[in-house]
Image (tube, rainbow, N blue to C red; front, side, top):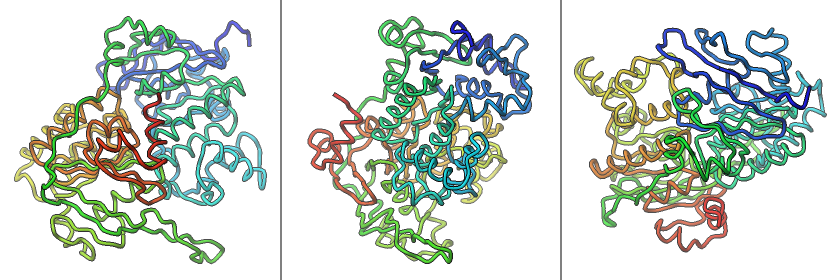
Length: 533
């Protein structure tokens, strides 16, 4: 290949969905050279992921079409309309992709060893002991703890951040010429995020790999990109070297993105407010079984002796690295996981209650899950998904009343009421997260577990969601457990913070004290990663 030919050349790329009145991607052109990192930046719904999927001809919609002038050339070879055999040789081998939502990309029935091994067997011809050795190298490379003991784990037995690391290991397995990374650090805490970015940078230097990095987080763009393309409503509105774009952006939309960041203060609280949720000595231990007969050998102590009190109108933030037990704790509080220890919701013990006895309480305590695509039924319309709680709890007497309530819930999260007739696959990752939040808000609960509710959202929409949560908290005296790896969000939303590490609480206190005078070394490490000097 001539040195004058870019590794990837995209010209006049336009994508049209059948029945759509406009182009989802409209006349996009850019080059990417070997060893270079190009960041594709924009809000959710701007066309970033559709552009990335087009590059490997992976658009999942049978009615998606490329305009006639569209061209995608990899090493001088045209990919649009290319034979399936040629695409198969390129996909996963010379060009690899890390998808945005790992739970929907990993096979839930196969172990992570089998899924990574399949890539190595197909493209590298490895087998037996060589496959396992390479899998362990890759898992250690991406920082998966206790990699050897997790080879037989299924995706649902890993945390969100751990699943994302498995996806990155699969993508790097064949040392591709081009890595397309679609929000690869979205589910990762700040310390692991920094590690993954360093790993990608080191591999890029070692192998001369090009990276197309798709993200809504401009703080990441500052760390990884050589050049930046900014997308808005399917079009490229600005394209420039990183330094030039950060110091002298020319387009108003780019300037708005650079200025957008969650701001403000947590909602003022009353220290003597009534208790909404209290847990004492909470434990969630998963048995570890090994051997041919699957004998129990030990326990994985996901949550170990945790005590928390959440008061009316308060927000308790739970921080820690992926795998620290944050999500398990949240699920245990709303009785989605079996646990030991005391859980009291509004002075009523929850331990030992039957499913029937819990049902009336479930309207009052809700959870927003981390992975929106995995928690939304793809066979139901958005209106059916959001309205399911209304039907279960007999809210709204008529179909018209329920439709009106669903529309109001969508508008609260900055979506249009008429979108309730569409299906989850027709929305971007950030839009799906807002749908998941609307599904919870429609029941008007008093306590909500928010498990990384803004991890898939761009910065401007993060600010909107934070403002929505604040307003709801003031108007309806809502109580939140806010689980996140983003300490910038914690600073503007949480009044009390709990730091978890390996299933235990290592430090807790008011947000004001913890941000200014952390006591535990682990807390200091998290703060240093989130707010580098």
